[in-house]
Amino acid sequence: MSEFKNVTDPGFDPLESPVFDAETMNNMRGTTNPNILHNWDFRNPVNQRGQTEYIVNGYTIDRWAQSGLSLELVNGLGIRLTGVSAGYLIQTHENPSAYLGGTYTLSVMHDDEVYSSTFTLPNTLTPGSVGIKATPFGNIHIGVAATYIRAVITVSANTTAIIQAVKLEPGKVSTLPNDAPVVHAVELPKCQMHQVLGAVNFDQSRLIRAAVVAPNYLLFDVTLPQTLRVLPAISLLNLGIIEVRAIDGFNRQEGFTFTVQHVFSSGLRILAEKTAHGLTDGTLLLNRVLFDANM
Image 1 (cartoon, rainbow, N blue to C red):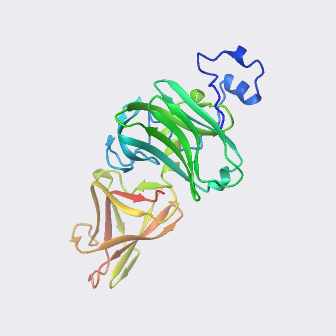
Image 2 (cartoon, helix red, strand yellow):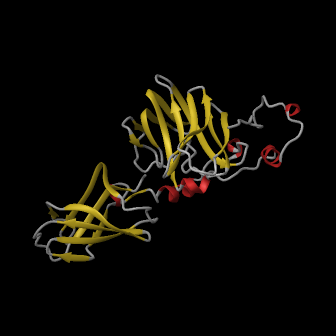
Image 3 (cartoon, rainbow, N blue to C red):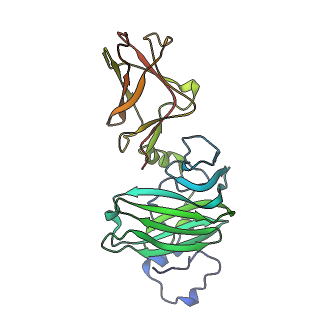
C-alpha cells in the first residue's frame, strides 16, 4: 500500500513532486472520478428508514450499516459518529473479483479535510484489510472477503467525528474535494435496489387488489421503482402496517402471515397465508413497510 498526499490540500508543495502523472494533473484541474460507493455524501444522504439517529447495530442511512456506534444526522453538515465502543460504519459490495488487480483510492472528508489512502488489490482474492489509513477519529480501510468488499470507517471508543463524505474510486489520487454535492435523485435509485419503502407515510398508503385468491392464501403484486437485488425481508418501520383487508379496503382480516414469494422487474409478489381464510377477493394495505434486500 502507498499513500498519496491530496494535491488539493493547502499544505501540498508542488516542488516536492516536480513531475506529475496524468491522474495528478487531472486532479489539479478539478476533474473527478466516479464514486464506486452509493449514498456517499452524508451532508444530504438517502435515508429511507427515516430516523435522525441510529443507536442499534445494523443498517442506518441507506447502504450503510454500523456496529458499536451511534449515528446522528447533522442537517447539512454530515453524520455524527460516536464510538460507544471501537465501532465501524461499513458499505458492502458484491463480486470482489471485479476489483482484483486494480489500483484504488479510498478517502473520507472530516472537518473539511480529506484523508486518503491508495492501494492495489492483488490479482488473487486474499481476505483481509487493505488501504488502512489512520484518521483523527480512527481509520479508514477496505475489507476483503470471499463474497464481498467493504468500505470501512472505524471510530475509536469515546470518540466523536462528523463525517461529510466518503469515496472509493479507481486511480492513485483522491478527487473527493472536486465532487459537487450529491443529487439525491441520482443516489436514490441505487439505494432502492437494496431496500425500498412500500409506502412512505400514512397519506401515501397503498391498497393493492389480490392477483390470486386461493382457499389458504392470497397473492399480491406490488410495483416498485427499482428491481430488488434478491428476495427481500419484510420489515415494518415505526407505525408500519401490512395487512389484508376485504375488497372494500376497510374490513381488516386477522391471522395472515406475509412473505415475499418472487421478485420481478420493478416489483415483487407477496404471499399472504391463512388456512381457510374465507375470502373470495381482498386487498393488501401497505404503509411504512420496508422491503429489505441488503447484504
